Image (cartoon, rainbow, N blue to C red; front, side):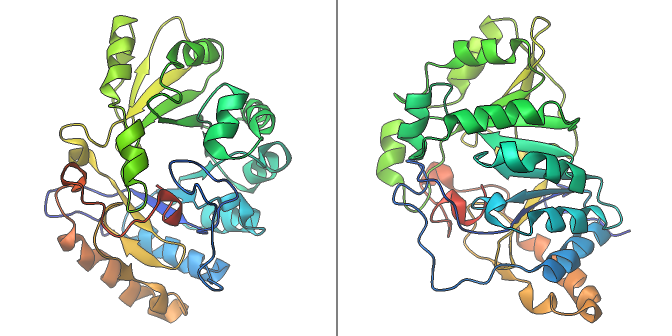
Length: 326
């Protein structure tokens, strides 16, 4: 079996696949004015997704994370999960969602083959949640997470974008939340994108401040699995859950990169903040194009940079994170 390795020697076992650019939230750090469609975009169809995942599986990838926008807006999401689960070599299928439809749909996703779930919840305070997301869905999201915890997922994670003066005082509340729940809460350092410069300058907070509080509270850093996401996870003997830190501005953050991305329109992105996309869609129209598709993916890894340019204010072609799923 071929494997995906770049010039820096990093191996790629993990694909983040966007299913749609659409999102029904208006998060202040991402889409404060809401999603506006670019004409009538046609996102990847089921057969295209099957061919794409098969190609990446052929290249040694075993983990797929389905993202958006908001992937639950796809009515065919259960069928997509079933299709991905049927691809030989795929062992883990994760989904990132804003959680607003969890109470009604999460059981069907699990039955379709989903193995892990990540839910965005930027505050444990309903008023703050409304201010950040533009939607009064706090109760549904929390109820959906509690339901997900009963369904036997390999992992349930909560994503919290860390925002100065918005939610940066909530670590004690989150620690109480994970005391009896087997869930990983990950604090994600706000990233600058093409459209959020002013917001970033007001609300960016270095995630090492949370790490310092964890160290002082007796939390211990855990080893990172080969196919894990970018979080550094901490555990404590007195808590059932874990706390994770995703700090893209930290030293050597990109050294452990193990993931590639494909947009909802079929472009391969070697980096979340890269300057270009590599079109794959023309090779997703027929099973007969599987070998050229695998070859195109494999030969592009030589173009992957050693790291992103966020420290220099270089955000690449990512206007906002909803456009590629973060």
